[in-house]
Length: 385
Image 1 (cartoon, rainbow, N blue to C red):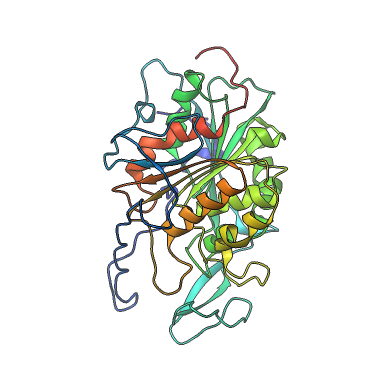
Image 2: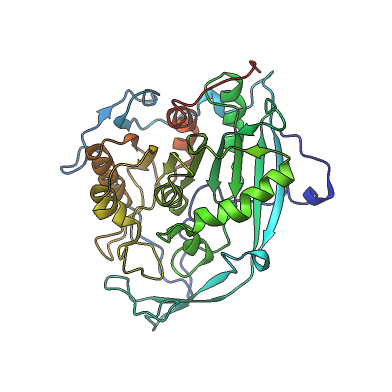
């Protein structure tokens, strides 16, 4: 589908498998892992306390130019823009790797599960409600993979808008951009898919990168990733925050908002699927003791509105944990919609029926509309096709 550059740096990388915007599903039970995580309950979007939302006809997406809350029906057919179309120019994808030994931000850790322990990586005591299983970490190297989509319409030497995505290569995004750019529905933009450093949840490198409530990950991307993107793909990236977007799913989704929240001078547009706006941060930070739950609990309500445009989705069977009151992904996203509305943000919230965590079929249905929504107001220019 894509034309890859024939340089030695790229040989052998295209066969790698990247997780696309989702945390790993629960593994079957073993002696080591214990019982399988219980299935999440199906939530009703009209539950008391949830936001008031407009129910859409089954199969329809929310209107591209409408802010507010919407409910998708249970049928999730892929949008035509999610399939390569005859006659539409296809972008080029450049792949490269980054080694942990070269990073000043993330030298690498790995999670160790301690059945009898309650110790965080810094030696802190695990917070109340964290569960009986303590975690700690040890240094561990990693190799990070990065993929850069460059549309056929890109003019070399010009400063291009771009979108940064979490959890590695996202070919669905690249296909959607091929079609949307050709149809003049979004700007001619670069897409940067950044692999995580490995593992998941508290104590892991991925968890450290995505769930930490700080400016660190955005600064890592700015200082270590984007210069390599420009060099390896021979592109120039805009410095204008209006021309910069972030996206991701699950913890990658909360990371997308974290990047823009702590660095609004870098990013103004955010797109998230099943955002982990819950208490996954590890180690505990006393300034944000409830992790990303703090977004809707304190941070957004107590701060002046920032110049952000946000699209977010949650599924009716999205993640849920009863170990505390800070791990219901549906409630977290519902709360996000409430506080964003109260503060006057430009946002669109989609509640998807018949959908699980970072549901692939929902993404196939909604991604083109979501991209159009977050890029409103940015000039769409260039010759057709």
